Amino acid sequence: MRVLVFNAGSSSLKFGVFDMFPDEGLAQAKHVFKGSFDRFGEGGCDYRSGVEENSVARAPHTTLSEAINAVPDVLAEEGITDIDAVGHRIAHGGPTFTKAAELSDRTLDEIRELTPLAPLHNPANLEAIDVARNVWPKVPHWGVFDTSFHLSNPARATTYAIPKDWRAAGLRRFGFHGTSHKYVAHRAAEALGTRLRDLRLISLHLGNGASACAIAGGASVDSSMGMTPLEGLVMGSRSGDVDPGLFGFLSRELGLTIPAIEAALYQDSGLKGLTGSSDMRDVEERAAEGDQDAQLAINLYAYRARKYIGAYAAAMGGLDALVFTGGIGENSPSMRRRICDGLEFLGLKLDHDRNLSVSLEGRAAVQIQAYGARVNVLVTETAEQLMIAHEVAGALFPANSPSIRIPVAVSARHVHLSRAAVDALFGPGYELTPDKPLKQKGHWDARERVSLHGPKGDIRNVAILGPLRERTQIEVSRTDGFALGLDAPIRQSGVLDGTPQIRLMGPEGHHDTDGLILASRHIHMNSEDARKHHLKDGDFVSVTLDETGRGLTFDKVLVRVSENAFTEMHIDTDEANAAGITGAVEGALQGEALIRGT
Ligand code: ADP
Image (cartoon, rainbow, N blue to C red; front, side, top):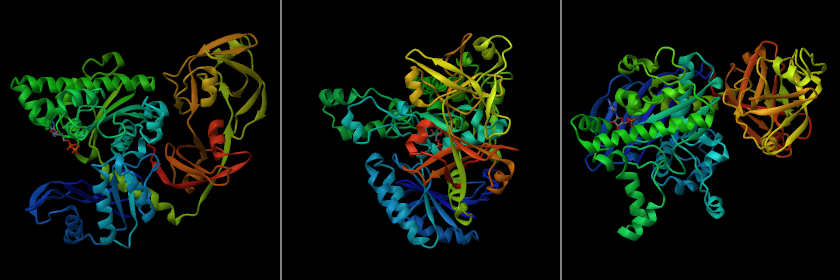
């Protein structure tokens, strides 16, 4: 499937053509062509083309619309005439667009309504879509949103502590660069040979815009940009985090209007505000020559990024890998070094030679951590356009295949115990009594029960599922977490480092252990079903519960493939209540994997 991807801004249009093989995932995708029109003006614009090398020429187009109209001729010259779908990067998808969406008149109206949230970005995206739909009227057009990946962030990460009316008006944190963060997380897992679901990653996208993203188990759990792309890290010309009190001060003391302050925070701040240049290459050069403003800017830039790494490691209860991407992340060894220096206490240490000799040819993801360091550090090119093509191909692929239905089971709270836990709770050497077999072969519900004891309250009569495991794991719902007074993170089964401590109580004593989690929703699938549905272990899919009282689509459902599994989706009681499940129910698997496992 051949996908044309557009990334339109007010003064530039980037585009690329990709051959996608949905069955094969990202690795086999082929970048057929790329081009960009830049700096539209009276006299035309710059034009760059070519996958491997950039050649700069002048083109006569003075507007975005003219440039898009010229793309068919540009492609025809390269022998590219057959486009199967067009993917558009869209900055803001608000709270509703959780994944790629086909751009019908209705979805376009919905996107238009989001313009107040992204007044600088969404209008150019919408203009590009309008024009492109006229130029390619017969193929499907899909939007891929910078915000979608972050819609998995928990409320504590997305909520501003502001008056209720403001929150009701839609003020919340969204996060951006989602397509880039998602791609680099996937690429890093692939390069590390580790399943994405087992990793706690921080992705640092350091380009003209810059953001950090905490990714646990393949899902974004926090990101540094907020309601707008202004919050967070120091950027080329954007301030990142400031005290909102400066609005009052600047208005009272300097008589500045809100639009003037906002414009300055977007366009005259960041590296530009500190040094006069928004380009890190200039700033690094000047700092080396002794310019103190440039030196402060570099220190501040690195310090802010380092603070976010610390914060996100804390948010995830640990860190397995840090990934650098974006123009600065990819190309500035000295900035990578400044950011990482001082993080040894996290187990993060660079190999300075590797850091200096990074080559990213062929979409490489290069490891630069010191030998033996606990945290892996990687550098990789961001490939947002490729990821957009991947999402579009993935969304279109199932159009040809019949709907796949998966039985859904609701997991009530339960524990898996280790030998040490059983000894402490029931007496040394005690053997649990298998009572009822579970659908997954070899697993059972024990006759014994335990109590959970938290700082706020107890939950009694909690099921124990066998057989014993290496590590004790306690799976509760978010509501249970509040009843206990403990903040359980969403985790895949078995990924327990950094989870909260809890006391288990049994007839013979108590056992204090970590391992309290909200189990991330997942599908157990046997190998045969996985083959049939073109899915791999570690893929993430969406499942729509269309037969329930409160129909609901669950995104980011992890597929766990094992040879003899009983194919079944597991959700917790809160999720079941949200969907209005009352009895046996099936869900419809939506489309191709959202993220390919490794
Ligand atoms: P955008 O966010 O617009 O896509 P890029 O990802 O291309 O931007 O990043 C642009 C930034 O990367 C600029 O600040 C530029 O100076 C910086 N950059 C590019 N190459 C280097 C380099 N070799 N050393 C330091 N910074 C670099």
